[in-house]
Image 1: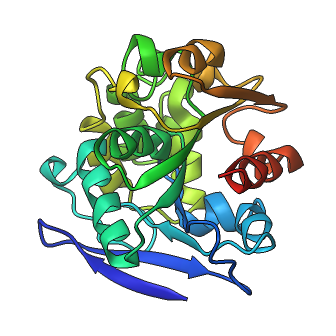
Image 2: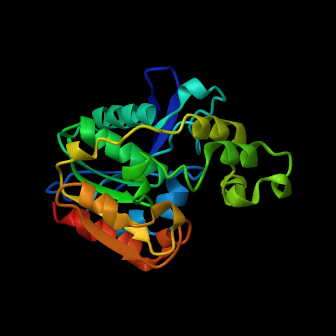
Amino acid sequence: MTDELRTHDGLTLRYWSWSRNPDGALPPVVLLHGFAAHARLNWEGPGVVEALVARGRRVYALDARGHGASDRPHDDTHYGESLMARDVRLLIDRIGADEVHVAGYSMGAVVAVLAAAQDSRISRLVTGGIGAGAVEVGGLDTRVMPPELVSAALTAENAADAPERTRAFRVLADTAGGDRLALAAQIRAVHRGALPLDRITVPTLVLAGAGDPLATRPEVLASAIAGAELTVLPGDHLTAVRDPGFAEAIASFLARG
């Protein structure tokens, strides 16, 4: 099922929902995808949605502003993870639940942290695809993915002309059918301040691929969140989500609350 959400600044966002014999004993789950991906690519394809609904969960996944089937303005002022966190709170309002669980990957993990620090309705949290950079830099690790280079990769006339260091983001954007100018606007507006990790008091799972350059030393992030658990899986930033353990780790952890 799919529906629309109107944001405070006039954008229309698309979100998806799934359920099969939902068990009302556990809260709904909200899934937040990574940069240049979209909800179904990040969560349905790798089996996360199926793993959750098979356990009786009602699942929601938002196409972030600038991504997927949501509006894709090209103005930087419409972007940044803080605005996306505000969109998440609006989605929770729409769901109408007193309590939700949230899982985010990469950009979506940053959004999830910001939302969980502000919204007491989020009672269990999973962050994937981020590591020490979330503590040492704040947000995505811009030491590894400099915004100016990612923007150059996205706006280059040909993929072959994109800076080699960030060419994978251009390939992902093209594969996912992304609007490259909208994605470039988001990366220019990427969150750069300290994340409020000390305000995360809910049970949290930190997930990272062992070979993920954007999630190196994930134990640093886990140590910065009170009581957080850490699971490291095979794979890098793009392949860890397709390891069978990824969906199982999320579904099992969220089933405990």
